[in-house]
Structures are given as C-alpha cells and as structure tokens.
Image (cartoon, rainbow, N blue to C red):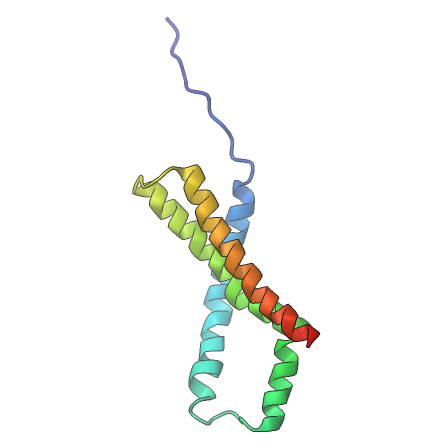
Length: 126
C-alpha cells in the first residue's frame, strides 16, 4: 500500500516577495524615522529653515531623481514590507485563500506605490 501525497506546487514568485519584504524592512527601519524626524518634528519646530528659497530647493529635490529614490525608499518598499506581513498574518490565521490574499496585498502595495511615484513623476513634468 502506497501513501498518496498531494501534489505540491512550488511558488516561483516567493523570492521576489521576500526580497521586497527585506528591502522594505531595511528602508522602514533606516529612512522612515529620519524622514519623520526632519519633516514632522524639526521643520514644524522651526529648527530647519522654512523660507522660500529652502522650499524651492526642497521642491526641486523632491520632484527629481533624488525625490523618486526618496519616495521609493520611504513609501514604496515599506508598502511591500507591510503587504508581505499582512499576507502571512492572514495565512497564519487561515483567513481567506493565500492566492487571493497575495493578489489583494501585493496589488494594493503596487497600486499605492504607482500613485506615489506618479505624483513625483507628474511633479517632474511641471
């Protein structure tokens, strides 16, 4: 009598999601706290210059290649990190099917990343 083992499918896309998860975790740990420090604490407290010249300089940085990299590192990659955590949390709680959760979580991360990068790209065109 032989045991019947269910057919196992190997997820070929899983290394991509783990890479985005890892990169998002690093960016979330390194860049998000510094962005919060500068943009939400030091600038409103008046510890950084907020005159028209510094606003123009910040705008030119944000709506250029440095801004694209900044938004990618502080918004897009952490979104994929969060999507991966939520997906695996739903899997552990056995909520929904993994395939549907994968599409929902990574699809939402891709949508919001596209919106964030699109704002920067539109700003570059003006």
